[in-house]
Image 1 (cartoon, rainbow, N blue to C red):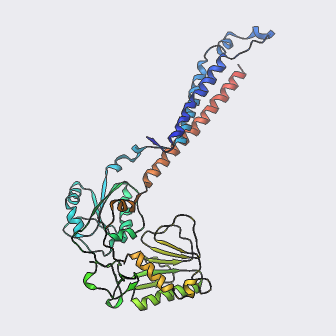
Image 2 (tube, rainbow, N blue to C red; image 1 turned 30 degrees about the vertical axis):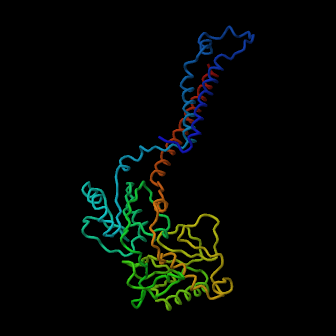
Length: 400
C-alpha cells in the first residue's frame, strides 16, 4: 500500500494522546473531606483506583479513530485492488506491413497466449491473422480511439506504430492503463510528401518553400496514403447567423481554389463523425481526433493542441481576419498544421515519442476512491461507537 500524502501518516503518532490522558486521569485525584465518604461501597472504591479495565475498550476505540483519521489524510492507494487486471496485456497494432513484419514474433506470441490484439482502426477490429493487413488510410487519427477501446478491460497496453514526424502534430494520446510503445523507423525510405485527396482527382499538399496549400505537387514523391479518410466533415455550430455565414464562405472559397473535399453541416447530425468543428461555445470535453476552432473565447488554462481559440467573433465588424480577407488563408494554414502536410524527413526522438503518450490511471483512481470511501465509513462508524460507549459509561457512573 502506498500513500499520496505520506507525510500526513505521521499524524498516527497522535495515538499516544488518548493513552497519556487515560493514565493521567487514573492517577489524578484530590482528597476532599466529606462526611458521607463512609457510605461509599467497596465496589465504587475499586472502580476509581488504579487501571480501570472497563475503560480499555474505549481507549482502544479512540486509538483506532486516530489511526483511521491519519489513513484518510494520507490518501492510501492499494495496488492489490487491481487484482489480475494488471497482469493482462492488450496489443494495438498499426495496419502497416513494416510494423507487422518488424514485430511479427511479438504479435504471434500474443495470439498464441490468447491475448487480445487489435488493429488501429475507426472501430475495434481484432487482429487474427498477421498475413492479412487491412487498409484504413491515415489510422494515426484513430490512435486515441483505438487505445481507449483496448484499455476498457483495465489491461496494460502495448502499442506498435511507425515513428514518423506526423505523430508530433497529434494531440496527447491519453492511455488509462500502464503501457509500452514499440516503434519502427524505415531508414531506407526517402522522405515523402503528405497529402490530401481532393475532389476531381486533385492532390493537395503544402508548398515546400512557403508552407501554404498547393495542388502543384510532385506525384512521384507522395506518401503511400492520404492523411484524410475521404471527405472532411465540418460542423458549423454558431448561435450568430452572420458568423456562420462568414465562416462558411471562407471554407467554400478554400474548396473552390484547392478542391478540398469539405462537407459542411449547419446542424449537428447524430450519425456524423466530424473532423472539424467551428463554434462560438466553450469546448468542455474535446475529442482528440477532432479539430476545434472557437471564436469569441479566451481560456486562461491549458488548451489541447487540437483546440484553437480566437478572441474575436468571426464577423466583419469584429475580426481583422475577415476585414482583411485573410480568413480563407488562415484556415488553410490551420489545415496544413492539423493534418501535417509540411514535409519533414526526421522521425521523432525517443523522448518526443514518449512525451506524446500520457498515462491517466482512471481505473486505479476509481478504486482508490472506493478504498477512501470505505475508510471514511469505518471512521464514522467508529466515532459513533466511541460516543455511544462514552455516553453510556457516564450515565452508569452517575447512577452508580
